[in-house]
Image (cartoon, rainbow, N blue to C red; front, side, top):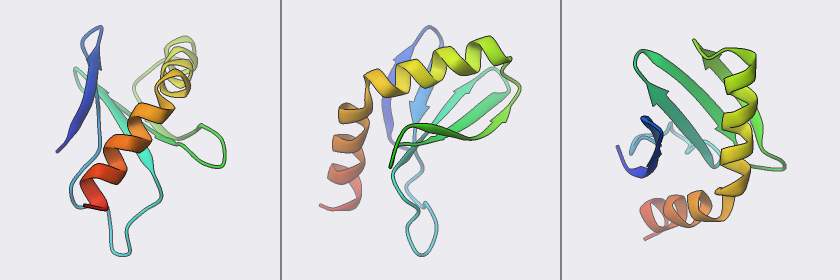
Length: 81
């Protein structure tokens, strides 16, 4: 499970086995029994949310948008190498 970065106790990661065929670029955010998944393209959007309230989900979306290039780079390095 490649971790792209950690922030405020949250782990921003993806899984090495992301489906067959490979799912589009996305990021999982996990913390203490909560999990959310965000697609990166064509725009950053929520795929699912398990446990985060609406305010935190919006904050996570903003964080993913701010780190979009970093996440895409890590994804491509992992899956396209």
